[in-house]
Image 1 (cartoon, rainbow, N blue to C red):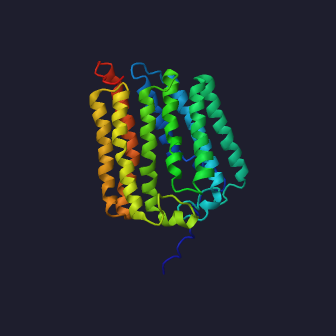
Image 2 (tube, rainbow, N blue to C red):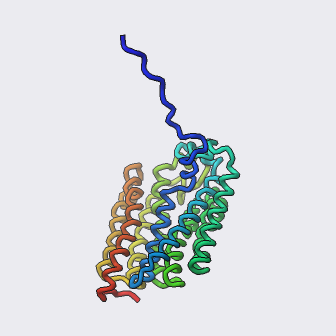
Image 3 (cartoon, rainbow, N blue to C red):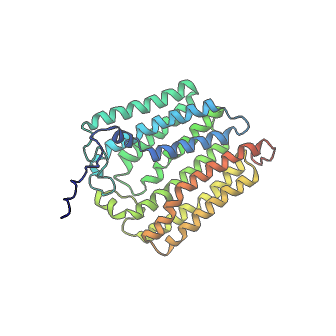
Length: 309
């Protein structure tokens, strides 16, 4: 006779444990924010990389991004409960007893990040980080997301702000190349999030969130994703023309955009989980590729091959 099976093990995280608090900072998004800041820093001053200043702006940006994510969790805890994808988040599932405490910690982290950047670097860096936090928390999360299907277009500035912060940390101003990079990230945000929204359109509808250009016409929405991805190509060309960028790197930036477009083109005629997934899965590596190209640009600029301003 076989022995009875062992009792099931409760593998759920501890209530209010460190893992829950860490997840409130949305580590994946925070990593992308830091990545964009690095890109702005490298583009602004490829001939003279001050690693201490780079570390400070990345640290300050991570604090503010993590704090903004906590405030996002706090504001969306009710709608998160209605979505399969988000209903197990710590505040939605009430694993953290006090949602107010999470909001308080979030505000403190944003203030700490902005203050750190303003004091240790310069006021423009702090302002850039603050603008990103306010756009994400107030404009996008609290105002536009529950009301407008174009929420992510305007909210996309939150992703652009780290590029501005990185540039300001490096040289104390927003150079033409950094502004072009901020534009590129701004244009990257819609195809990234709209591809996700196409994958999760039923979930968003269940939560009452209008996350597509037209929730009632996914065919139209698929074509919008393709057009928005196509805008990355001229934006990448501007980064190459306005930044201190060598020609091979400028070509690589444009090529990355063309690959993104090619992966989203099937959405023009067929919107399905498979076609939406291709663009979404490439969107993160695309942004990583842009920053890697800008990192490769640094030693090449020292060889005197730069073509930009």
